[in-house]
Amino acid sequence: MNANANMAIIIGSGFESLTAKGRGHAVATRFGAPSADIHETMLEGCPVLTLARHGSEHTIPPHAINYRANLAALQERGATSVIALNTVGAVSDACDSGRIAVPRQIIDYTWGRAHTIYDGSDGLVEHVDFTEPFTASLRDALLAAATGSGVDCYDGGVYAAMQGPHLETAAEVDRLDRDGVDFVGMTAMPEAVIARELGLEYACLAMIVNRAAGRGDIPIHDDVESGTVAARERAMQVLQQFFRQRG
Ligand code: HPA
Image (tube, rainbow, N blue to C red):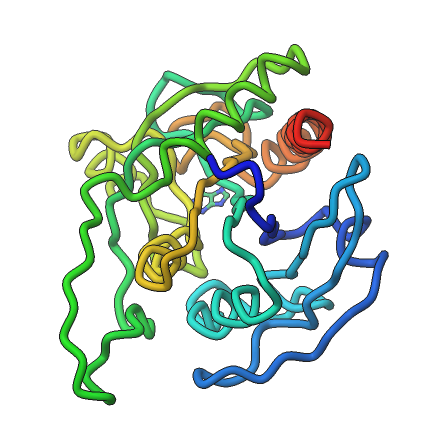
């Protein structure tokens, strides 16, 4: 990836330390307001922009996030490269709760979200190439940071973006499995494709916080509680190493 990239991190829950520090900027975009102020902070000596995807008080559910405004606001503040932190459930046996992954592919099952900047309103028709939904060089840099920090990180896999906000039925998870899905979450789409349309580098650092519905032997929410702590800790170690390597 570009060594001079201006980095941003889109944060789910649990990384308040990254959004609490630094100066916050309210940004207005042509798509409306982003979920929260964009913060300028430092991580391992590197400047980084951060944005709380679900809002500063975690009040915006996945289907109501203004993904276009979030990415446009980061770009307006100078971001060229975005690391997305996303929590997921494990569908396949490749990964278990508490681990992290850098997925390679996406299947989009969401509906009714503002999913493109090319919505026809300004007469522009564009069909971006989305064969590889994540930026390869940014994926590689995240995987190198995982190796460098000694964190076990799954390389690859298919992320399914579901509409939510409810978790899936067991039959839906079986269908996802038949579709070749490894992880299920609710936020990587349309985020990834809008990043591509805006010309931003984008990769996902997925935190596996539970076995998907019907797959685990403990209630999902108990699984989430323990899985989240372990996965968050690992993701933070990878981020620190990522920025150490850049600094
Ligand atoms: N399903 C969808 N989204 C999720 C899950 C899940 O099991 N876990 C964390 N985000």
